[in-house]
Length: 139
Image (tube, rainbow, N blue to C red; front, side, top):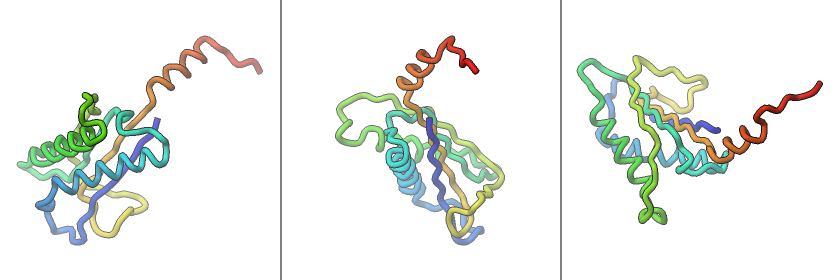
């Protein structure tokens, strides 16, 4: 199992969510997938859940972000050479938060978006569970 985490920031805290949120979320999803592939060997089809954290404001239901997230996942999961095959996309969650404080700060400025991607090789995990089922260690 593995987790990838990526963020987006603005330099001035008074800035609102940028107009080009679609491209920002797409870049964040691409970055998380590349991070998983390079550090764990798990590909995008091993992803189980993607959470998009954002600074929520009153009256904002997150519909623009939800659309951007769905579009980004659709683009990445249906990209070539896999475009002719039907693949399961991971579960998607939008999580409004009051503030984001990352330690250490990953980038200058104020973080406005964060993506967490959880992935696992379920076949390997099931095999490991089966191998170790009802086995006790002797001391």
